[in-house]
Length: 398
Image 1 (cartoon, rainbow, N blue to C red):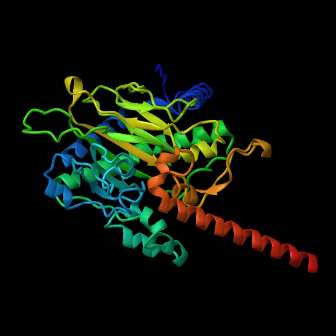
Image 2 (image 1 turned 120 degrees about the vertical axis):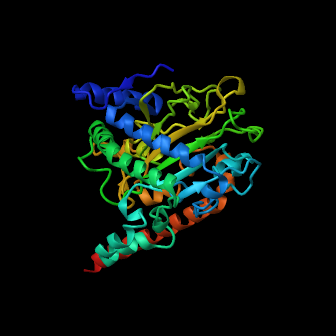
Image 3 (image 1 turned 45 degrees about the vertical axis):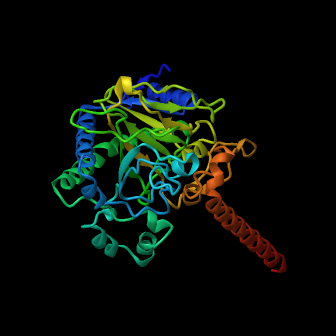
């Protein structure tokens, strides 16, 4: 696949916007270049992440994630999730990967929320500054509260370095994130500031894709399981996802499905590896924001061959979401007859990320979650319709 590398800070903004739009329309992703400061920051974050994953299992296990459900829902994990190295019907790692394929993703991960109120030493003070309604929003035991859980960092020098470099990286990358959101809004015709405000639940994740062949100093490597991938086919429920590759492993393993026949993945990785770039991957929320102009591709991370490059790699992932209570709606100039999606809050969209287009076989293991979502949605629609009817009768009487 021939993919243009786009400079998001190009002074010819019209040219840059057209290049982004063309790539999102054709591929469901775009590849952008990075500035020197951004490159330095992401490499420092990768180095600190690699040091964390190279700690022993006990040290990593001390910050094991209190996952919301069996690893199923992105955004509800904080801290470390390990790799079992065997078929896993409980879905500990990779969640639906294990549930659907019977084998876990071949990876470990570490996840943190990017906002200050998720930091242990700042959370309480910031919550106390909020009014009761705002505070309740972040303190719920389930639902919203699961998206804003407190971060968990290792209590050692590696953990301090990890937290420091990640926190610094958030600040360095934030102008780029805002630029991408602004660019998307301009292309689609939304008012400035449409997507984000103060309640987005974006998060940062490092994925450590385990080696498939023995490495220097290693006595053994966990066997590769039948039909295993480093990350199974899925769509992201985000507005968009930023993916940073490991410069020490100069090969691509990312495969995306085309717009036509979008559930059918190519047999070989088709997203090229380019040093010092980021991939902007369109998520299912942005597909709705764009009314289908852009599409969220099914994608997966393939296993490398042992003969070529079976060493471990660290991939840095930035999941970007709009505010939890915003309404995902098509661009302002969309005609009613051209609408492809119903309006839906980010909240409703997020809690149903697997119910918006994947093949039916993906949904079957998630039947309890799907049934709950559909039941609650139907009840809400019924209540709304009943209230509208009662309001109409009151108006007539008046």
